Image (cartoon, rainbow, N blue to C red; front, side):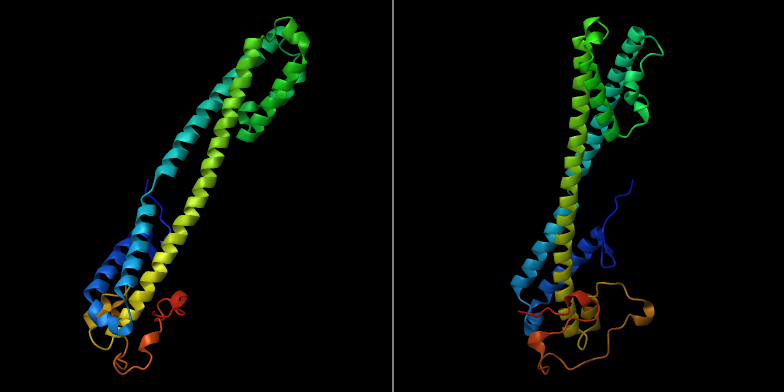
Length: 253
């Protein structure tokens, strides 16, 4: 089964990480020129840290593995509970007769119940049995049989709780991963756009090194030349290119 990745911009997570690492390398290669537009070594290092943090979180699969184990365990516990219920029902039918067990109708159809419905119905079933002293007194439902049913229900309830906790943790981790990728993406796009602004009037190949999104053949060349940073009075406040509207308000430190 293929793993599904969140799309960052027009990228899946793995593609973004690969592209971001290339851009980091290009930034380090061109740092002497890019210092003219106030890109610093520290900014590149900070961006690289964010990218590597995102890459590390992308590769974390412990929650997925834990959930698979928890789902398997819950299924086993449900099967054990159903076995205990059927055994108890068989005893009741033997004690009351095959047709005289209407007092326990709330447990009928247990196999078709949802997990939550089954947990609640079994709890009601147990309370009814516990309240019926006559059944226990005459040996229909022994303490051992009742305890087996109680334990099976508790194990099932614990398994459901475990899955709910894992789902909650996974939701938090997903939000954290998305936030981490968002930060890395914004940082890479900002630096790449500044680098493109610098190179677009000087070197087509270097300009292309910072293009995040693949361009069609008809638009493969860089934009028309503009005054170089040396004569541009706004070089300390380079506007982010239109490729990334989310980063247009950033200012180069």
